Image (cartoon, rainbow, N blue to C red; front, side, top):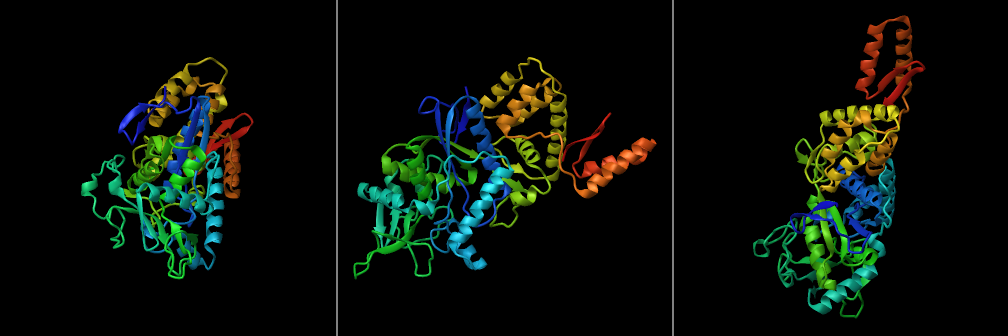
Length: 450
């Protein structure tokens, strides 16, 4: 039986879905103000593996991943400029044009990485009415309060606040990334709805902040609200698995848990899974630090299989440092896998039982990769089908070469026919530096991977 490390309970627990063989998964999606980077990709690749594994185990999975196209302010703050609006002003476009452009890129990047498309990809901007209704319930129940057109969640109403992050409510003052707000009763309270300044571009009529003339106030939702509202709409409450990277444990997921409990007085989700952050030179990879690598740029150097194999080498909950040596090792592993796949014969093995046993143990991909490589010479075509199905790998025999690489392959063949093994070996090593592995056959060279 599958066991997973639940961030909520701090224990590795048996995975028992709420509805027999049906599983609801909600994973935090992109804020569409810029290109997707590898930090995002690492999280989404892990949840794609988990989704594929559950499908392989005959679960009916409904996978929801939101599109944040409003409400996410610069610095994850509750005051200031919307990330999408800031980018829109920089590029001289509308917020909608920016959001839709980067949303398209996000879906194209998912496809390029061979990540299954979500079953539902709800946009925050298209669920404003549901968010307003959600807030009305919280106000009626006394979990929220309105001040000058802003609506805040009263954290003191939730004695269990901090259960996910392990933070003590008494020790929290201004909260993470939150500046002092004179309108709040308590500085740990968080915004559900914010009154829009005149220059704010994305705003909607609301029941709050009425003027003396009686006109309705305009505003926009707080960042945390959308996930509670859209997960409840598409998966119900509670649902099975809520996932993201570890950076979202506090305050994002902590606040989701609080507001969702206030709304339905039920848990938001049964299992919270948080993947480790992606690092570069020991620092978190992020747009704010300007040390990120986009998926698109990375795919110019490494193919999707190599990226995934590299991620498999580190346990999903631990940080992953993006260094060249790890990627080179992943390239070599792909070469070995492709060669073994070509040579695979039909025979009965116990490989699937071994693989399932380690994946059931908190989805231990480093151990899974060890088992794959240990059994490489014995693997059958069915075994490879299992590997590619669960991990979304292609393991293709050949790749498309550049014109220069094609010329080098041809020069090497001429050298081999002349018996100039030194020249042939020199060219082979040069190609290997570019990630091109060759296997000589009676019918000419076979190009295995890049």
